[in-house]
Image 1 (cartoon, helix red, strand yellow):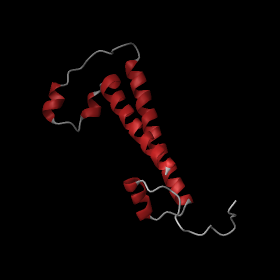
Image 2 (cartoon, one colour; image 1 turned 30 degrees about the vertical axis):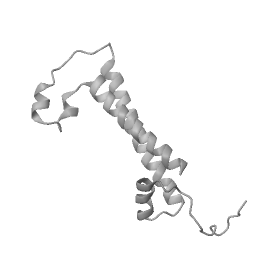
Image 3 (cartoon, one colour; image 1 turned 90 degrees about the horizontal axis):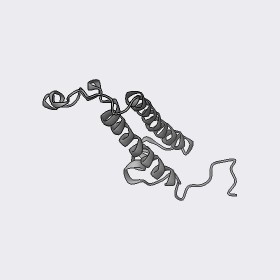
Image 4 (cartoon, helix red, strand yellow; image 1 turned 135 degrees about the vertical axis):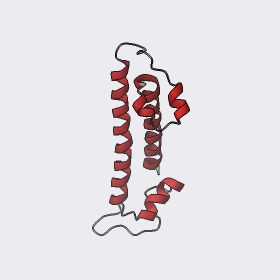
Length: 113
């Protein structure tokens, strides 16, 4: 359960980091093409807030995508390692049920110690 909570927090933090990098630092219209047309028209091009802001924004954006992808891969790897079905993967993040199998015998070849 702890891993699920940590991965959920990492995914939320990386999402907020992506938003901050895109809106505050990069400020590129290509990142806002899914916004409504009136919002796109209202966005005016601005100069960099400080030298290197665009480069820092793109680096933070790449790092956030890496964190988000890493959290998904780590959760998937843990689920495969614990023999999760698709339903258990789904309910893991929906209800935060954790990775421990309840009332399940240990796998063959493992000890209880």
